[in-house]
Amino acid sequence: MPTLQTPFLVLISILIVILIYIVLRPVKRYPLGNCNGRYVSASLLCIAFCVFSFWDTDWFHYLNAFDDLKAGYSGHMEEVYVWIAQNLSPNYYSFRLVVWGIAFLLFLRTIQLLSVSKPLTLFFFGTIYIVWFSYARVSLSMALVLYGTAILYGNKKKSVGRCVLAVALIIISFFFHKTALFAILVFVIAAVSEKYPKVFVWLMLLAFPLALVLVKTQLSSFISMDFDGIDSDMSEYMSAGQGYMEKDLIKRGLGAFLQRTLEIVPYYGITFVCIKELKGNRLVPQNIQVFMLIQIITVLISSIFAFDLGINTTTIYIRFMRFAAIPTSIVMAYCYEHRLSYRLTKIFIMLASLGTSYTMLYSLYNSLV
Picture 1: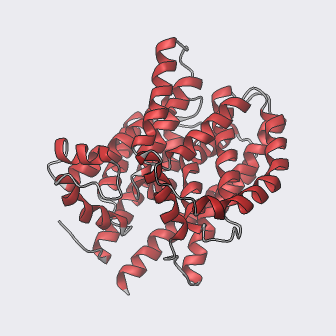
Picture 2 (picture 1 turned 120 degrees about the vertical axis):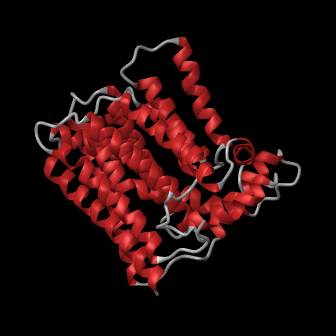
């Protein structure tokens, strides 16, 4: 098993993404193809990418932590991963297959419940956002929240059992990653506002400056709180949050700046498209509207941490923004399929594709030097 990132290993990751593109490319043609065989093949390739995600050094960090998990020591990770390592994972590859494989299957189940082309959504996800989905375990908790949302608002008939299952999945997500509290908060706001999306959009935009001032004035004192005596799970969550905020290992240089810009700009672009369509299009199905709201809320709340808050919050800003990866794929596919804000959507799709290509090539470059 490889223990260090090499150019050859990064090329394997790049090759898998190229194969996903080749397999699913026909689904972009009008009329949109069903391509069931291609859908299955691309899904298997996506799982393979998650298992062999050599493009990012986090793959090797999790490898180093795996032996500790097998020994029963969770470290900074949640206890559930100790159980997975000890009971479901004879080796590190199988550990990744269980964690990221389940997360990806939840993503597939999510889009199957929505009024959107499944192959087209998989195309955008598998060729653009799979890189951010594969790099951290938070993807599993994120997938749980979004699958729960799809159960509540999807095309299938609601029942008490389905509602209970959806809420349970959303709550359980916290035990797979502590930052799932952010995703749960986003879901709650979206659920409260989905009856009046146009009004909500204006309220969110107007409230943003106030929220920014509030966070800036309260964050420093919040971070310096003494957590002695607080419930251990909550204490661990706060400590983890502080660790993210105080992290100072931020990539620098023109190459890293360009990579980050190409990653972030499409999130804002698709958010603009969401706002535009929620304000003027009455034909967007409710289940897509909810995911448009989730996209907007995620990006707006994340953006608060992009400002100077007196402490380093860049890491939290990026981590929270990546919660929009799945909603962005869904909105991209729906707008492309129905030609909503078509020219804008295509521009942001091209930028996002360029960003992923640049990220992979930048990783290859870093592995060479």
